[in-house]
Image (cartoon, one colour):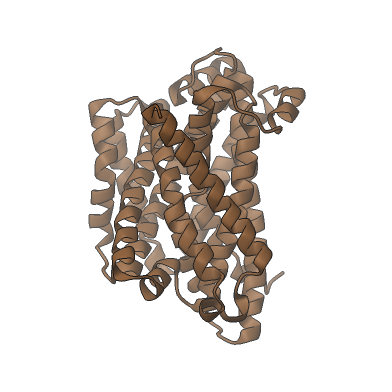
Amino acid sequence: MRGALPLLGPAFVASVAYVDPGNVATDVQGGARHGYLLLWVVLAANLMAMLVQYLSAKTGIATGRNLAELCRDHLPGWATVGLWLQAELMAMATDLAEFVGAAVALDLLFGIPPLSAGVITGAVSLGVLALRPRGYRRFEVTIVGLLTVVLLGFLYAGLHSGADPGGVARGLVPSLVGGDSLLLAAGIVGATVMPHAIYLHSALSQERLHLVGESERRRLVGAQRVDVTVAMGMAALLNLGMLVVAAAVLGGGRGGDTLEAAHTAFGSVLGRGAAVAFGLALLASGLAASSVGTLAGQVVMQGFIRRRLPVALRRAVTMAPALIVLGVGVDPTRSLVLSQVVLSFGIPFALIPLVVLSSRRAVMGRFANRRATTLAAAAIAVVIVTLNTVLLGQTLGL
């Protein structure tokens, strides 16, 4: 155990992307509008995420390069630039979710106006990122601490929600009802399999390469299986719990489908403690995810085009759309859900290069994917692309 623990951590940082405010918003809306119907989508998305994040971690260990660097090395220049620009747009959509979610939490807990709350979120996330130059372990411990707050907050709410076991069981059977459920399903997938987490995880695993021998790499890959299983398993339970709580408290149109409505309903139905727990969990998820999102943006830029912006400047650029949304008074929950739908369209642009490169023996050596692994990852990519195509056609009325 003492030998394994120092090797764990990257998956917990990456898992923050799977329990961010975008997840909370899509789960709240999914539970409020459709009860337990979309539980199977949450479960399937998190199972897909486990494989995707493991492949990302393995790629960083096997090659000593992160995914963005591998794309630059093995893909044409035009494709590299296109992927970088697309990844930067996804970073802005990610930051929109993190900032809006944390700002809503600060408003709910302390009555801070949304725009001011967004600025506070940016300042705190910079403070968390300042820990990273002092060693990745301090940063990881801080992120895990924030994740613990999220876990305890939703655990408290879940234990008092009075969920229907029969409804939960039926929700694990795949089905959709109408276009709105498809939109929320795409949002849940976009909020779960996050493009920036795919790039980031390979970079975080890359940092673990203190030993470069073959046996050490095998040991590190084995440790990452444990890391991914535990971290992504926790994220899956959190996401399932969020939707179950929302379905139990808000389902059937009992209390609205926004974050604010969820906070109010938790207070009136479950008690003031549950409302505070929800607000603290939302705040912790926003702060942790905004820090991780900025770190992922640094990895993407440096990997694709060998450039690096000061953290404060990158923070200012990517948070601008979120501050605009907060400033003009757009419905926060709606903007969060739509940002996750946008992110779902960005997943294939990170996932397909990962599947292709991780299956090449010339790139991965003996760590190249087995045929079954490649087929499973390719199937995930096909499912996501198909879902997004259907969603786009529905949106355009085709």
